Every structure is written in C-alpha cells, then in structure tokens.
Amino acid sequence: MRSKGISEDELFSFLETVKLEDKNHRYILSSMCTLPHPVAVRAHDLFMETNLGDPGLFPGTASLERLLISRLGTLFHNPGACGYATTGGTESNIQALRIAKTTAKIPSPNVVIPESAHFSFKKACDMIGVEMRAVPLGRDYRADTDRFMEAVDSHTCCMVGIAGTTEYGMVDPIRDLAAAAHKEGIFFHVDAAFGGMVLPFLKEAPLFDFTLPGVMSVAVDPHKMGMSTIPAGCLLLRNEKDLCSLSVDTPYLTVKQEFTLSGTRPGGSVAGAIAVLEYLGHKGMEAVVQGCMKNTRRLINGMESYGISPVVTPDVNVATFESPEFPVPPPWQVSYTRNNHLRIVCMPHVHAGIIEAFLEDIGDQYAEKAD
Ligand code: 0PR
Image 1: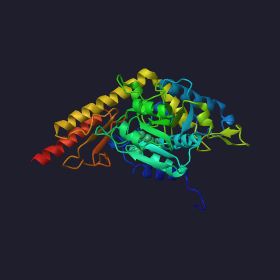
Image 2: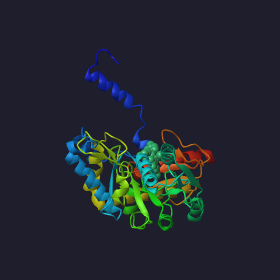
Image 3: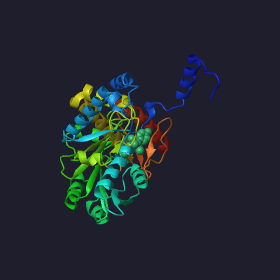
Image 4: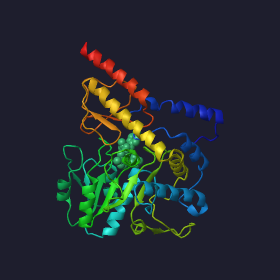
C-alpha cells in the first residue's frame, strides 16, 4: 500500500485510463449481461451502502427484496413463492442443489442435469459432494427426457432443466421433465437464469415455471435480461420449508437465522432490479424482449444471406452459427460454443443499428473471400 495517498484528480485519472482498457459495449456480442438501465443505476446509487445481510438495520431495503421476489413469483405463476436475491445464477444453482440434497436425505446422492447445463452445476456438485450425471442432449440441443430418466435412480436427489441454455438459447422439455420428477418424488430445479426474463414476455413460449406442479425452484437473473446492475440473481422456491432447510443461527444479528449463502449482501443491485421492473412494467419488458428477438431473427437472416447457417432456431435471443470460413473481424467480440459454433447474444445493448453494422462487416469479409 502507498504510505501516503494520492490526490482525487490523480486517482480518477488513473481509474479512467484503466477503464479504457475494457471492451466497449458497442462491440460486445458475447455477453449475457448488458448496460444497466438508467433507473437501475439511479436506484443502485440510492441504496449503495445497504447490507441485506443484516436486514433489521435496513428494513426498507429488505422490503424491496420481498417486493422483487413477489413480482417474480407472480410472473412465474406463484404469487406465494418465497426466495431471496442471490449474486447470480451460480449462487442460485448452488443453493437449489443444497436444498435438494438436504431435504432428500438420501445416501450417496446424485444430481441429473442435461449436458447443456451451465458450469455452475459442476461447482455446486463439487462443493456439496454429490455425483453429477450429465445426460447427452437430443438432436434439437434440448434435454432428451427418455435418456434423462435412464440416468435417474433411487439415489437421485435433484433433476435440473434449463429454460434458455447458455450456449444455444434452447428451452428443455420442462413440462415432461417436471412431470417425471413429480411422479418419482424428486426435487426439480429450473435454471431460468437467462430465459426467466425472456420467456414470460413472448407470445408463444414453452412452459417452464410454477404452473407445472413438479417445479420446486427457479433461478432467474435480473442482471442478465432484467437490465439491473450487477450482482442481481434470484432463487425462488415453491415451499418456504425447503428454503428454511438451509437456515443457520445468526445469534448476534438483527435476525436470528439466515438461509443465504453470502453473509453481507448488496441492497443496491436489488433496488436496481426492482426499479427496472416497476419502471418498465410488463408492457415495457415485452417491448425490450420482443425487440431482442426481432434482432436475433434479423441477424440469423442476414448471416444466412452470406451462406452462414444457423445451428438451431433458438427459443431465446442467443444465435448460433456454423463457423464461417473467415474470421469475425475485430473489434467485434463474439464467442464460440464447445462445438466451435459461432455464438452471438442479442442483448438489449445490441440494438438494430449494431446488428446492421456487424452484418455489413461480415458482408465485407464474405466479399473478400469470394474475390
Ligand atoms: N445459468 C445459466 C443458464 C447461465 O447462462 C449462467 C451464466 C449462469 C447460470 C450463471 O450465472 P452467473 O454468471 O450470474 O453466476 N451465463 C453467462 C455465461 O457463462 C454469464 C456471462 C455473462 C458470461 C456475461 C460472460 C459474460 O460476459 O456465458
């Protein structure tokens, strides 16, 4: 550490220079995060110092967390759902698996997930000491229910379905998986970290939420399509007793028990998340999400016109393509899936003008290759 501090001017000149090294959002086509909505930034700023880890000190902020859970529970057809704001999909998935393991009380438990599941499930299974069984997908890049059930046995404490896969933007057959889990009496968790803020705003979307009796928990991330500040995830549970199965005693705090993974927890990003929902309402979210889907379709059509085929027709705004024969020119930031497919996420910051600029650059590469 410096023995004597530097001036504020010097400090911020240093910070601004460093920030210039970061990629510009104009060119970021690979991220499931986006520029936060201005009302999220303002709300985050207002609640900057609050700590939901000691909610008795911040009852106002704690009421915003309850409002966020209640709004999302209602959106997912269970106004009575309980839950809390996590740091994101990773924490929500870890906690869902902990709940499943704790409540099942099965010796040598395993968790069955589709191969498309986010790597956070690997971390979760490592941490809680359960066997992870990853089941190969069907040809449509969705979980194959029959194969899935072949991996399930009397030691299975949890089955997982993904509503909006990270790599291909697909929704698993959640209805079938949830029904099978229900029949077997197995805890079923839906990872809707991405799709949870997309599917409710589409005209024809597959069912993925508490409408299905087998669905016991849902992970959804306001810091992805919810345009909040980071970190803002939510874990929702059908039954309060499941969440309470994680409770530990916190004798010297303003509340005597907590079930969260983190201790100190930001109130700022929770305020940011609820601010966006209240400000935009269902209609505003619909406009944002449908705009992203329109841009996804335009991108797919545009790429096809250069002979670059889509791998699938995605259920959410993630487009994947057979790898083109030419490189995607910098400074565009794209990503590649484990199968080496080009992947582009059409987040709200990737607006129509950006898609056109990208397609124009791809068109130039295509023309060069043809020469
Ligand atoms: N579940 C799903 C379906 C996800 O897509 C992700 C993250 C998670 C869980 C984990 O969420 P957290 O990262 O919030 O814990 N999906 C993105 C990914 O891994 C996260 C991301 C976002 C990565 C922005 C890069 C980036 O620039 O691709």
